[in-house]
Image 1 (tube, rainbow, N blue to C red):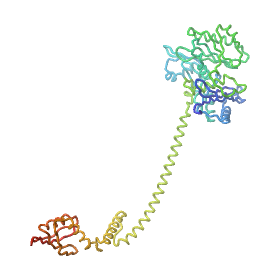
Image 2 (cartoon, helix red, strand yellow; image 1 turned 90 degrees about the horizontal axis):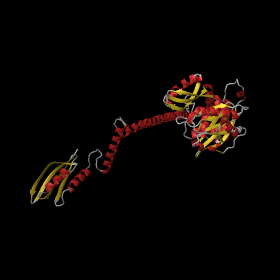
Image 3 (tube, helix red, strand yellow; image 1 turned 45 degrees about the horizontal axis):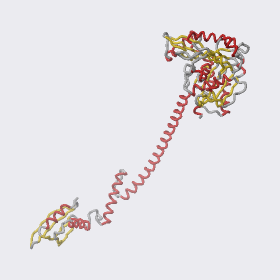
Image 4 (cartoon, rainbow, N blue to C red; image 1 turned 120 degrees about the vertical axis):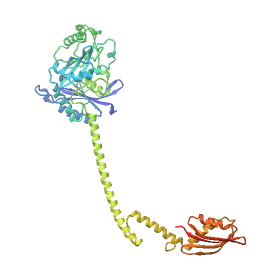
Length: 485
């Protein structure tokens, strides 16, 4: 659930209202809400705006209440920004964003370098666009953002309070009705007027301050006339929807004074509140804080100061930090693996050196007269010598390395056994020397050919001088056999 929660902060010169909100169906669910009073120095007119202590108190309260959320959205009070409608030659938001700051500098008489600007298109025409511009002092904006960042509460968006309130009212069923009324919301010191929807562009909003002793009915009558005059013939409705959080407006008297039907509405219908409202808090401030959070919880158009001034880098900074930590960790791991590998290499090389030294000494003893050059060659020679010794022990070789008598006879009998059984062979004499074997005997008629052929086919025997003589239907032969080298 924490993944769908947003912290909405409504920043005012005399304090801040904070809500923890989530999206539940078509409504905004307020899970927790509390207020933070501004420091005493803000009551002094000569003192500059300071939000540092308030940001610390907000962070401490969030930790104390153990609030979990993913994003933070801020709404700023109308006393902290200026609003003006001006004309732009362009109709595309990207083109307007490139020139709006200089247009605002001329119309609002502000220094563009020291001003944070947000805007939305109020209407479009053939000659360009009517643009609602919101301008806040750079010092005020940086004070709010940096104070929150220093307390690990980096806001994703910073919007005007009128935009956040309009966002909540637009969720009401009556907003899309046929009457298209004018929406008015009042608190103890502010009034918000939301004009009827235009055919092209966004709904315009106006905000102004209300004195504690001021006649609110007379004030609203005058402002309603100004709003209807500005709408001109495009407004066909005859209804005023009003929300008074302090209940100081006489709706019946206002109906007579303005000539329009006045009805009461409650924007909290779009909110499901789980937490109790803090004492002495303004309900409208809570609604505006929830509207700031709603901009992050649902897809909606935003009038954000941050793209122009101190663009939000929270997720990107966290991603870059993660990449840096991962890169450093991998670098340390590779260095550790490299050092470990080198240590193992040097250790194995040391063992190898000692083993080679011992092996060469023992090789010189085992292979008398042989010179040790390389380990691989020495191993081959030792294997060959071991095989020779096995052959000597088995009788295949003599002690000098030559084939023994038994081995030579075994090879001859292998050839003799390959002669067909139909050939009658009688061996009379076998004479063996160090180099040859001389065999004397007789065979049945023409049997000597089979014997000579068997010797020729043997892989280890080679036939030397041979002779035969036929006598008494027998072939008497004499054959010399040598070993193939």
